[in-house]
Image 1 (cartoon, helix red, strand yellow):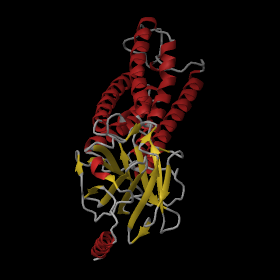
Image 2: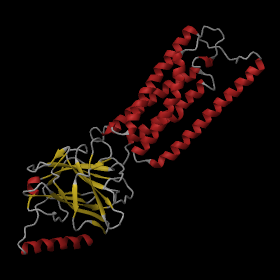
Image 3: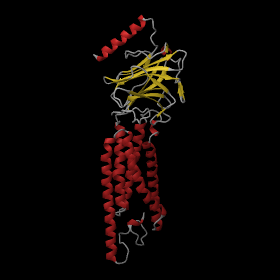
Image 4: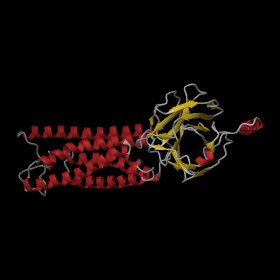
Length: 404
């Protein structure tokens, strides 16, 4: 009913303008049907300005439209609620990488009458001065299919008067084109009845807020490796003194990590071109996988040297010390993954499991240390007794000496 009343009011306004002999502003209009977002643009003749109307029901923390083929380099207009509940904040931003776009204070926006938040609808009616060109792009004012992108923010409430307020990753996005030639003419904020005109969608909306099954599998495999398998390998080698179990367990863990890494790359390939390498999570992921492979080579090399010399070696010491760091870095990377996927709800359970596992490993290390001291006390020789490795040349070298 409210929408019908507004439509009738707009029709009355159009008729009034015509009766007064005034030309209505030229416009090209895009409507995103699923979220009922409307974007209409006007290019006044003999000017470098542009007028636009941007509105949508406030179901997300923010929503935005950008001029360009992709997020990278496009001039975006991002709308969210102001601190006063009836006001709207409109932020012009540009993304130089696939990270949070940065506020551009050089872009001059003038908010016009009709902007605000009312009846669940956030509306921005604005004039952007001299912004048909910007540092990383421009509008083709003669094009009948100028590319645009749009996005909806994550769920939640954002209220800020700051145009540089921090934004969380978009939940969904899409692309469309507008007829700039049709939008050129008499200047002014377009009057729209929320019906498309001179617009086409190019591609389906990509829902990135819903984590895909592939991404979930990636998280499961990596959590299994860094929360369970790799710590188990530490327990097998250090407190329990079973190097053969350590070898088989860590080899299996490496396979799990490589599968998880492949699943992560597959999930990321569904994102906009280039987005899969832009976040801290992905960067740390590449580093961790590289270190895991280095650890595998180091462990094998240390064992081969030991088999030949029956002596401790530098490679083994580096392998042992680096191993703890790799597990810790992989654990931290998991936190960044939950944050990047907007799944902070799992961070606390993930942390609890990590602390419990660390506590168990710590207890086993302490138990091994206490048992070793007791054994040395009983022997009275200051040497810890232990079974000799089957594949060692002998000389009384214990299982624990490989990586000491």
